[in-house]
Structure formats: structure tokens, C-alpha cells
Length: 212
Picture 1 (cartoon, rainbow, N blue to C red):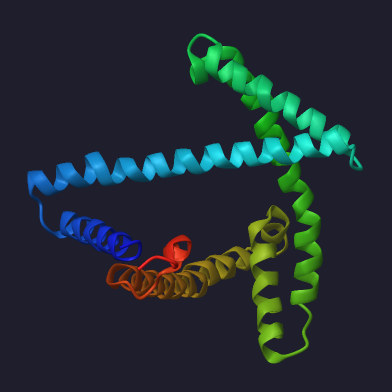
Picture 2: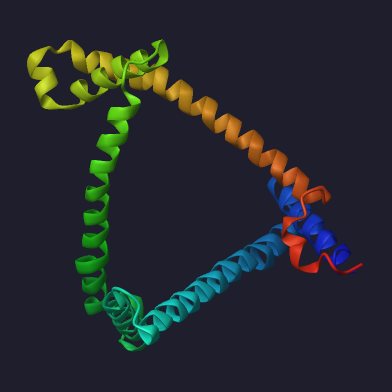
């Protein structure tokens, strides 16, 4: 029963969502949007709560044992509880002016800083990838050079044709490749959904494999 019931529930939930996409009836639409979609929201909220508790537990252990660089754990936990307090108890909660300013002045700026630091890693990986060691690498290097030069004002100042070549590469080669990649990923997702629906994939039953 420990395996049979989850498999039946998985099949029923997936079947109802498929029907909701092809058959427009008030009962199916209401059931899918009111219960199944809300269950996804609850699952995400539950996962976020577990993740927060896991972070707190990890950094409290770092502070208690005074591991190397445990001061950063103190800063993280202090800011975590401060932002949590502001979001829960300030008037307006997440729409509070101070809370919005706090997010815009810290999270957005820190995210931009981390992203800018990753540019150095992207540059080094691009250098290794664009080495003309083979025909494919050479074609990649030539196409990337045209795209980079055609995307900056200096390229247009050197020759106006760089921008036309860049647009042609992006609209024809890049778009075609991305569409092929998207279709392949879609077929892979569809096959995985079918495996879950018919009970072939049972990764979500690992905790109940001991049952009958």
C-alpha cells in the first residue's frame, strides 16, 4: 500500500492536469486550479521552510564549534532574522517602504556584484573554449568574434557590416539551435512525465520502498 497509493495519486493528479489542458469543464478546471495548483504552492513553501531551517542549523553549528570564518555565519544569521522580522511585523509586510528599500539596497546590489565577478570565470572559460584546436572550435571562434564585435559600438565604427553579420547569426543560427534544443528538452520532459504517470519512474517512492 505504501507504493500503490502514491502511484495511484500521481496518476490521478497527472491525468486531471492533462484533462484540464484539453477538456474545458468547470469541475475539472476548478479542481485543478483550486487543489492541485495550490498543492504546488504549498510544496514550494514547505521546501523553502525546510531550506531555511537547514541553513539556520548549519550556521548555528558553525558558530557553536567556532569553525574557520564562523564570523560570516554570525552576519548571515543576524541579517536573516532581521529581514524576517521586518517582513513579518512591519506594517504592510513585504510592501513596507523600509522593507522594499532594504531589499533593493542589499539583495539587488549583492546579486549584481556576484554576477559581475562571474564575468572573470566566463572570460577564462571562453578563452579555453574558443581555442582553434579543431574545425568546430574554429567555427565557434569565428562566429563568437562576429557576434561580440557586432554587438559593441566599436564594431559599427570599424565596419557597418559587422552588425548585419551579428544579426544574421543570432536570427538564423542561434534561433534555430535554441529551438532544436527547446524541442529536445520538451520531448525529454514529456518522456519523464509519462514515466512518472504510468509508474515507471519511482524516485519519489524511495522512502516507502520497504512497504508492500
